[in-house]
Length: 65
Image (cartoon, rainbow, N blue to C red; front, side, top):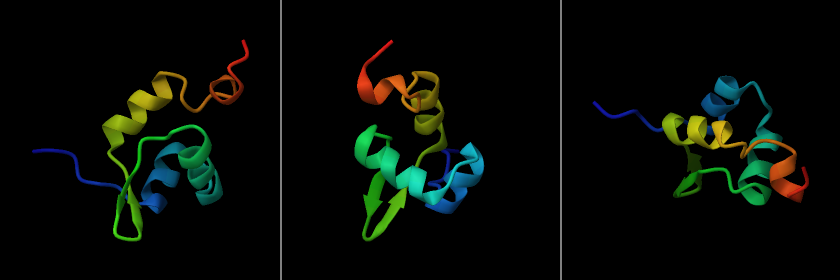
């Protein structure tokens, strides 16, 4: 069975962040998200891989070390 799609609310709980942070990360840090109609949906496996690859780190935006 495949993982079900998560909502913004569920991904905020999973990562312990706010909705505003999720929307900012989608826009500025290329957070893996998929728009379904007017809703953003997420695959937990994609999000976890993105976080592990430092997608959520401060360095990912500026490119600095």
